Length: 340
Image (cartoon, rainbow, N blue to C red; front, side, top):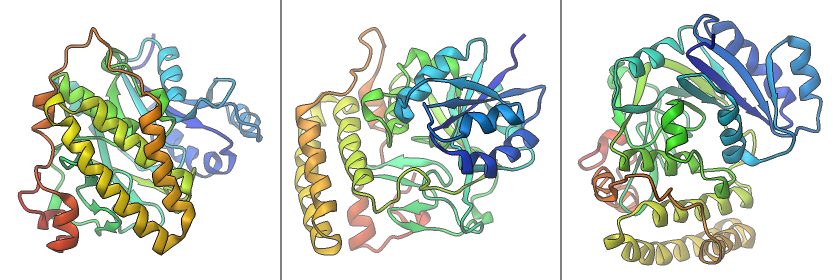
């Protein structure tokens, strides 16, 4: 008989991270509640040898499918579980990290997915970039978090309390999601490869009529940037291209063209800024992202899926994050005008 949860860690050549972080996952994940599974994306280092040596469940995918398709394949193979927990290999969990997440989903039938409070494993008093206390999106597609706006991070504070709070997106670094809904929604878009694929999925879940929450009583620590450094042009390319794909796929038709039109000019300014600040490689990554967006297609939303794009659109932050941050100097979440 399968347990309720499959904690799936996707690995690609991450022996050092597994050795550093996997022991806490195995120690603090209740055996009666969940199985810990490492899905290996065709590693060429000695990850598989290490994993077999410590006796963890291994799912060998055979090649590198990227974050999105790697998880799709692993979750399809993980049959019989009610919930799937997507967990990055560079996450250090704490005692009682899983139970509050499961309990909240058990008692909230209209909630599709949840995430914990995510702190930085580099600076443990700080909220972490990729998730913090839950994610949001402004109407132009700029993502931010309760605890992180652009590159400005907040210190962890008791002011946000431990009560679960609704969010627009839950981070792929640590997300507990109903397996049946994940599959029904089409999973992560494999054409994204990596970055912002969870925002696309979460937007789709909103369009299907579901909610998402952060459960702050659950706490984990994320190292972050283990796959691609923030300054890597490849990461810039993926973030910009995939963000445009998120908008094109999920915006209502009535606002799609105008939103993308505005983003074209904003991204052109961003490319000029990167050219002056970082040199041509990062600026070129933004231009390549637009070219890739215009010349290639993402996976369409399944035709049989009943979605309401307008209802999900109304959940976006209705102000420009760029203006609030740069012009009005609102650098922290609770300073934002009409914050979520």
